[in-house]
Length: 357
Image (cartoon, rainbow, N blue to C red; front, side, top):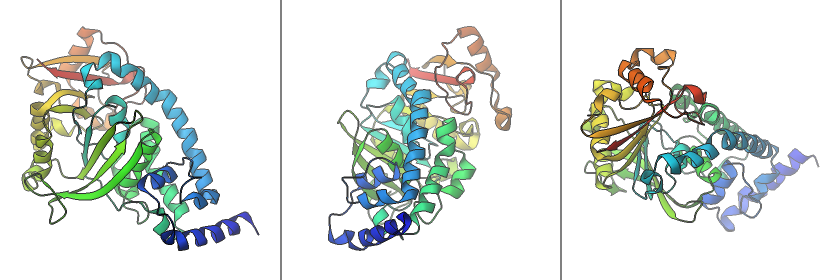
């Protein structure tokens, strides 16, 4: 019997009888989607699929490069330059993030709670055992495609995500979150689709804001919680569905990360999100696409600059900040060993750490 025929025979038997055996856990599914070893899980038979073997090989190569180029350098940089924010267990807010838990965790590995938000759909909870057996190769290929930009350039391309994350199989942000958490060395414990009412309370009933809650154990063994909410952070969106910001407010003061945010908070129609972060953050780590420099009251905030400021990339050139150019020119900031935001080369990247006085 040819190897592909053998696989489909094994997979058909596996998928048909898994429900009568041990069910695959969220962590089992995360390992599979991340291309990590699944030999001792109920999903082990999928490891015979040539498509999964190729998937695992490609991800191993991509993560080895990402670890060397980015993640290891961020982990080395964080303790020296982020100080208390790096070690803090306080909540981490990441507006306009999409499913980018990867960089949130790299910069703030000790946060007890991560709150991510974007327009991207949450999607269904991944369950490979319930997928049509012939849908897995295409699903894995699309998952790799949706991660190409963030693995290569450190940010998602919004217009591509709108297509990539709306696939019927392995669509939405959840498969991406699974991959990032598993590859970061985390163990997923529970995954629950949730909603928020307009007062910011979690509800299983009628909700105005939808999302997911993932409880996991980080690489160091501490229990942590990740929330992702699909929500419109424009002023009109926050006014229509205030549950998200009310939920964040109930978490208390924490830290904020803003990266590759399309300069939205430079616009008046996103002033509510900008003001919320300024009022509820013990520190804000961002690139120049986040909160504009002029929004930080110098009597209230201390700003520290890293990297360089060559200005926005061409598509965003109208958001050039002359005051930021002056600040960089006069402060002789330390260079960055990793890339951040829309600039792919470290020598061209800006990073600003804002802390209240």
